[in-house]
Every structure is written in C-alpha cells, then in structure tokens.
Length: 157
Image: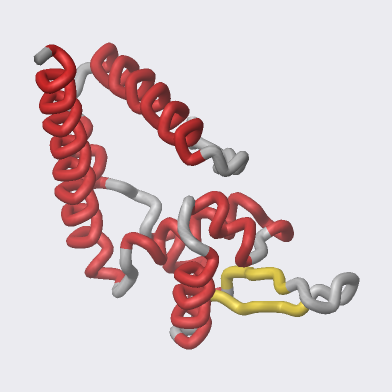
C-alpha cells in the first residue's frame, strides 16, 4: 500500500512539474511574441551566445537537452529567418559552427529581459527559490542517472 501511495504522490509531483513548466513557457511565449521569437529560438540564441565559437549543432543539442534532429531543424528555420548563420569549419570538413547574425544578436538582446519569468518567480521568497533550485537539481541529477546515457548537459547556475 505504501508503494502505491508513494507512486501516486510521485505522479502528482510529476504532473505539478509538467503543468508548471507548461504554464511558465506559455507566459514566456507571450512575452516573446512581440519580438516574433519562440521560446526555443530564444533558448538556442542564448546557448549560441554562451558557447561563442564552440557553438555547433551537436553542442547546442547537448546544452538544450534536445535531440540533434530537432535542433538541426530549428537551426535551419532560424537560418531562413536570418537569425543564425552556419559556417563550415575550415579545419574539420564536416563540422559546422553556428553564429548569431546581426539580426539574431539584436533579437537575443531584446529577449533577455525575462520579465514574465521574473513576475512568476517573484511569488517565491529568496529562501523558497534556493530550496526549489536545490530540489530541482536533485531530481535533474537522478533523472540523468536513470537515462544512463553518460551525457551530462550543463545545468544553469
């Protein structure tokens, strides 16, 4: 019986995590709409900016914790929209680097305000934020152990 109760509690927690994530993403999407940028595009631009000259589709996939095919499709769309440019690596023939274009850099700057995310997170005290971060980090680490992939995507702060 205890296992069943724990299972239901775990399912409820998973639902709360999932629904909360979806709600925050919707608020972020609404905020980004004024710039004609999606949440995943904003994330990709942030990663490209952080990686600098090390930004490759594979590395972006790893950081975004997304399948390489979906990141490749995303980068193709972003290139068509003039947000990024793919540059062949002269040292490694089949390697491609990804850089933000001027338009992409401007979009990146505009989308780094996170006003809606700040509004949502302002419902937590500093102590609650720290507790939430620690709990989520613990769950993140355990989920990666279960995946047994050996891949450890960087985790922000």
